[in-house]
Image 1 (tube, helix red, strand yellow):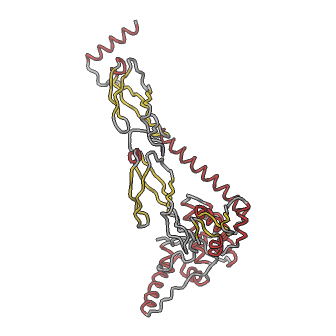
Image 2 (spheres, chains in turn green, blue):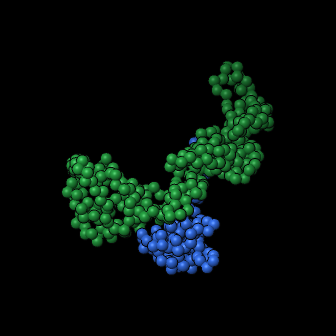
Length: 302
Length: 97
């Protein structure tokens, strides 16, 4: 657990007045406010730090304590702990609320440093006014590309609640789906929050995906490439027999229509599959093979 | 009071302690749809997400309705750019090993 320099967080120096603190806090809040920085975890973190710094420095009592212990806060934390325990024994615990300037929503959790210096168990988020509409939840779902090839049902646990939902085939990496009414409860009859589900899709297959088209490479031995023949190649969900034309060049692409990836929310519609042939040259030739290749080479030069 | 997923504007106004004129101003700028039913103004609950964001911007950062309009336009742009970036990154995977 590291010491947090709240003055540095608010970009002020130690002699800052209450008005300076308020000004600095407001200025930085305008920069890092979550409503202005969607999907920005860095800004969210900054904003939490700001709120914490403000809670400490805008409250004269907290600021004094913070200044007094400073970098030797661990000592202070020990002292505070002992003091609190004593208070609890005497049943005199008073869960004082923080003062400070007008609270912001989305302040969220406190750092461990804050907790140990100013005590845990305070009402988290007490400074934030509860929204009328329930809180929106954000969740990330990690899936494999194979999982999203077909439409399937899945049960997710979000904030202790089981949600059963259908994941449509062809959902894309980074796509966000809104599931209405699966967020927090509203206040005073307000509507429920929504759940925003972000899909993280990893691809561990031999296929590359570009939009709905799949790309893969199939090895072809020299003789089949030269003489032609039939091979079996893998598609995403099965196998396919392919006729190789005589004289097939390395890197030749074959397009298999509708053997690609399903298109999101368009049932029965698929992209295409592109197969590139990679011709494998024989290695470790025997004496006899070398002779024959030499002979072939001669035939070509004549 | 709630009517078919619609919320009485007065309820929101008193809950957030925001003047009704603020909502009218948002309405004038095309940021909020207000429906009049039985002579009372309502909003559909699917607007609550954005409306609460507007209220926060107003209450916490002192942004006025015109400023909110600007912010929302920029946020829309950011959203569009983020989606484009994701799509581009996904396409880049094609060229990675």
